[in-house]
Structures are given as structure tokens and as C-alpha cells.
View: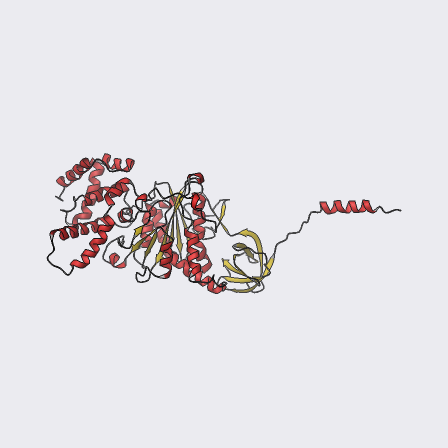
Length: 501
């Protein structure tokens, strides 16, 4: 029998071409170190930075350090039953979180898992937690206001859609309540809000969630929480998970307000992580890497161009200062990568002024672009007037006989401070803010005793709601002031029939 080599080789070639491997190839490694939410593993030579890894107990981890000998992994979940020698497997997927409107109204952890006991979240959309920020040409200048409902902010340091406005102050100066009021004021404003709680007590987060629920704000809010008892990797990830959820809405052309409460705790968690991981030189805890950590995060807030749908993410990052030191390391960093800061002072807070905004140190680098025309007109010089009043007040404590001009300035300043005070969870619509500030700047309050100003304000709103709603409507619809004579006459009419003559 003659063996035809050509036939055999043709047959072998065909079989090789048709060969379908049916084995599953996944790269696995072995854990060499475990502790404090950190693992190191050998054998994952092709792992990517930020890749999801799975341990044999089902816990997921994320590749953070890629070194020649091993891979540093941050563990996102339970690590008590992971041992040295445990197997860890690559997934080939970059760390991502579930996104989409199914998350609205829910309280979730940084991995997108619900923690509110309301059952699972059904969404098939995900986004990577790290994503390049929009470039220069993909952005638009801020041109729409984001009304917080707080007179002191909307008049002095306005926030626009797409802006990053830092809220900075010592602990217990009312930072969170400013952000919660801003969220409450977005009702009916076509805004989705995301509140990221980093390193807070579970009970505190619960209180905030209940406040939002009570005022009907949970209908448009997502709460992402990584509480103080969680391992540091989750605290480090929480803001990134929040902004990934926000981006999904922004690229759909919607507007989002995201609150990071607070980034000082994220920096501390990241430092802990870095020290445990023993990150390579230049990538360790402080100083440079924390700056990069916050820059990457905050740069993703933007007002995108019309080609991309014109959506926006407005960020309110918080930084907690120690004894009012805004020149401290993290504070300075975050000030340099935001578009303004609202500085809350504890001595103002303790003297009963709420929100305790220091007009001199607070600034909005977007300024009038984030205000409606009417507000620009009435609040033009308010910030400077208030700052100069504070200076004057300190100076005149020692002098007794003051000239009439100084006296008038002091009186106006005291009334300004009084007008800018606002009770908790009572945000004001912008037309009413304009009304009271107009009355203040045009001298209608000069004759009203200081103790009566808040009562005057309440009565003025009620009177206008009943008798002059059309004037308020002009401000609402045209965004401009009504005719000055008509407005002056209406305020004077209210004064004449009131007890505040």
C-alpha cells in the first residue's frame, strides 16, 4: 500500500484549521500577602492597572500596583477568609459600576450594590470608574445658574451648572447642611443629584437619607455611601463610583449635581492604602499623588458642548480644615483645581449666622455667568460691601463717635448679615431672594429694627404672593427685574400697611 504523503498532510492541515480549543484560559495568581484590605499576588504578569480580579471566596479586588515581581491588589469586600496561598483570577475587565436611572432613589455602596434593603437594582448599563475627562474643545463655559436656594450663596458666590465649587470649613460649621439644602432646592429643576458620603457614621448617613426622603428629594437623588467602618479601598473608590454614575446622565444631555462629603477623608483613606501597598516612588501617599487623585476626579465635572448633548456635572467637593487653616496642604490643592470656594467660619457659625459664609475668603470664579440678570443687578456689590463691613465692624469696636457715613455703612452691613441668614432646610426660590435683596440694597430695610428683619422678610413674601404675584412672575419668566417704579411702589405699599414703617 502506497502512503500518499500529500493527502495526509492536506488532511492534517484541514484538521488543524478546523480545530476549536474548548478549554478556558484564565490567568491565575497566588496570594503572597494579605491584610487590611490589601493583597499582593504573584503570577498575574499580564494584569492591567484598575483590572477586576476575583479571589476564590468570590470577593472582588482591583489591581492597583503593577510591579515586576507581584501585583498589589485592593480588596473590595470581605477579606477575612482570604489566606496566603489563595488563588486569585484575572477577569480581563476594568473596574466598573452599574449606572442608569434605576439607581435613582437608592442608597448604594461604591460597588453599586444596594444597602437600603429595597431589593436588587435592575440595570444592564455599566461605566468604568476611571474615565478620561472631557477635553478643552468638548466643554462649554458655564452659563446657567444652579440655584442653591441659599441667599448667601446665590448672591455672593453663585454656582453655575458645570462648575466645581469647593465647600471648605472646620468640622461642625454646617458644610453638609449647605449641600443638603442645595439638593432640596433642585426639586422641579430637572436636576439629578448624587450625594457621596465618605467616611461618615452610618447613623449620620441615615439621617441625611431621611431628610431627603421627608422633603421628597430622594425621587431625584442617588446616595453612595462608604461609611467609616468600611475598609479604606471603598472610601477611596466612593467618589469615583459617584462621578461614573453622574457621567452616564451627563452624556445623555442631563444635568447632575454631585456632592463629595468629604474629600479629606478620601485623601486619608488613600494615604492608608498607599502606605499599606507600598506604592512605587513618586506614587506614594503625600503630596503629589493626592493632588492627582483629586484632579482626576474633579476634572470630570464639566458643562459639555452641544455636540455632546449639552449636559453638565456640577461638583460640590468638601474639605475639612483644621482650625480654619485654608493654606494647609490638601485645602490649597483642591482650591487650585476648583472654580471657587465657599469658606465657612466657625466663629460666624457659633455667633448664630447660618450659613456661616466668610464673604472675604469665599469666591466664585464663574461669578455673574452663574446668575440671572435680576440677581446680578441686586447683588452686584454685596460681597465687597459685606467684607468691608466686617473690617469696619472690627475697627469700630474701639471707637465711639462715628461720622454719619460710617454709621450708615454699619447699619446697612448689620441688616445685610441679618437678611443673608437662613433657617435649615428652607431653600428660597430665586425670585424671592431677588425681592428681599432689592429691598435691602434700595434702603427699604434701613428703618426696620434688626430684630424684626426676619419677620419683615416672611411677611413681605406672603404679601407679594397674595397681591403682587405678577411681579414675582416677571422675575421668574424674564430672569430680569420688573420696572423699578412698580417694584418700589409695591414694597412701599407693603411697608405702609405693615407694622414696619
